[in-house]
Amino acid sequence: VFAFTVLCLVSVSHSTPLLCEKLVQPLESLAPRHLEGRWALVAGSLNHSQSMDALRLRDSITMYFSNSSDPSTVSYTQINRLGNGCQHLRYNISLDGSSFSFDVGNRFDLNGSLHYTSCPDCLVMRWVVKSSKRHSVDLYLLSRRREVDLREMEEFRAQ
Ligand SMILES: *[C@@H]1O[C@H](CO)[C@@H](O)[C@H](O)[C@H]1NC(C)=O
Ligand SMILES: *[C@@H]1O[C@H](CO)[C@@H](O)[C@H](O)[C@H]1NC(C)=O
Ligand SMILES: *[C@@H]1O[C@H](CO)[C@@H](O)[C@H](O)[C@H]1NC(C)=O
Ligand SMILES: *[C@@H]1O[C@H](CO)[C@@H](O)[C@H](O)[C@H]1NC(C)=O
Image (cartoon, rainbow, N blue to C red; front, side, top):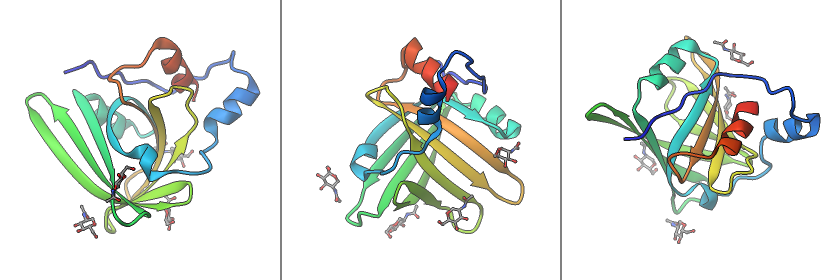
């Protein structure tokens, strides 16, 4: 069990405009191989308060991506840990250039993209979630490690 850090959106005034621009642009391409494997969710920032509250309740979240024989599809498993319980969520993801969408039937829309990070073993993922009840933009910091260093966290905070 590790401490799960949750951040709020904060603006960082000392970032240079150029760096900020780089941080908010989606990456141009997305290689399934880059996603492959196990990731710890280190931090998340959501503009939907109920979803943010739900996220805070998790002790940890682990995400697995695995490629399939179809290069435009990736399978996704998320394990939410809450006390002694675990919740497994499985979805197929379709890749479309630099963005991807989760196949969640017609229940809601979940599209994502990856963003720049200078952290060598991290992913920054932006999700746009749309349903009749919720329209949120989520930013997640994933790492192969369970914690990142202060500088890496600062960069994500700026993002
Ligand atoms: C979250 O941000 C998006 C994009 O700015 C906006 O369209 C949406 O309404 C926001 N959601 C909430 C719950 O504030
Ligand atoms: C997934 O990617 C790995 C490493 O890139 C490769 O060795 C493996 O064959 C791929 N699996 C499938 C089902 O394409
Ligand atoms: C993902 O796609 C595969 C192959 O089409 C299918 O067998 C599997 O049931 C799908 N999984 C989910 C969770 O939708
Ligand atoms: C997600 O992507 C699909 C397919 O590209 C598109 O139809 C849908 O409008 C997108 N939804 C959002 C919330 O961007």
